[in-house]
Length: 557
Image (tube, rainbow, N blue to C red):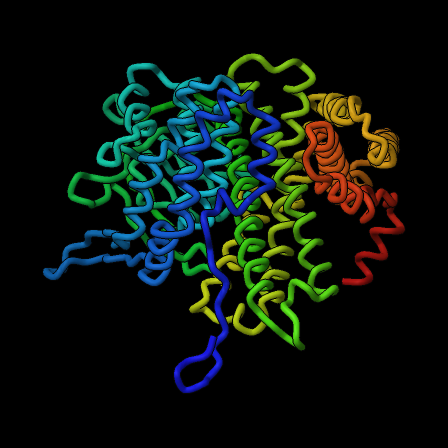
């Protein structure tokens, strides 16, 4: 636009209601919900979409500017270890509770589709939450663990707070697992739990504690007399904001998620309650990890959606060489490629929500339960790689101003970069997928479910997509047999490419299934185009690895 002096000022990209601006999300929800349930969830989704584009986004910007601060000493020299948090961060927490981000899934008013409803809410909430979505992910896991495994008397009060829609009553939970010795290898944890006067107390160091200000936490420790790790529930804070037998060493300075208070702490006899049986901690904490990976997937799709909304809006506002960017063929192709990435990631995320909901409510078939086990790491690793690509390309699509902090676009890229790391890197999750295949026979139901996604597709223009999915499934099955016959080193070296092949193929099947529904219901053919382009990139890269190949890799390094 031009000022009164005739100077030119470029209109920045604008956010509008993020639910209304996302036809992909709306179409998938229409496909997955019966009409009466869909009608019931649309008003809260529209409300949250409006908040995400307005006041919630403004709070996120303020929380990023006013980063957490560790106050170790009070004026008279006493050690207090308090964390000063932005009022904006606390207000985002209150909005999340009011919107029912935790309650929606666990109240299960829509049966197994309650997980789908929650997924849509978190998808909209995340990009405008200054990563309050992280403690919500851990809270979701804590709720599930306490409901399934904790003593009912111990769990009743925490669950009431963790599930509350009242912002004055609502709690969030942390998870304290990472230690310097172990990292992703949690079995190397050195924290110990001792029974003193009939009470469990924890001693040790937790190196990476996200959302340290959460009202409670789950943590692993070596319990007296038990060879394996046990799971404990902790309430670390006193009412006056001081810690209970915990020293807060430092807050971590991170590339992104800067409003999220991440700390290193020393446990110095903090009281804890045992959850489940002694020595069963690693198995029980898997529930938390799997739900965190589900939330990680939703965080990735949420950021992709936000990047696309901004990039597409800007493309209609920015004129260069006589035409808006959106009318320029190369720019149009770039944005279309990003849209295909998003369509695939969104389809995966919602399918994972569907399967988790069915497993939790006891209506999943054995095939669906098996598919869910393998899809959880595969969805997380695939969307984690996608979101970094999409966020980087979106900034490039906006140009130099996309690199300027005041536009808030760099935050999206910084925050995206945590998603391939949080709750398991791509390599860690690729190996987890191999374990699920070897120990739980998870590949067979996963590939069968992949084929079922396209079994009913009868739209002629999708014939090639169906054939491509079936061909890829056969190739993945043959490669899995080959890996099983080979050595462990060969399998592990190929694990990343194999896991990404699973992701690409399952996404292709889901896009084909949704595209068939879209055409049969008289809608556009957007998803048919998305499926064709996604498949056109190639679904599998299954080149074998052997000792010669690994020797060459060592030579390169």
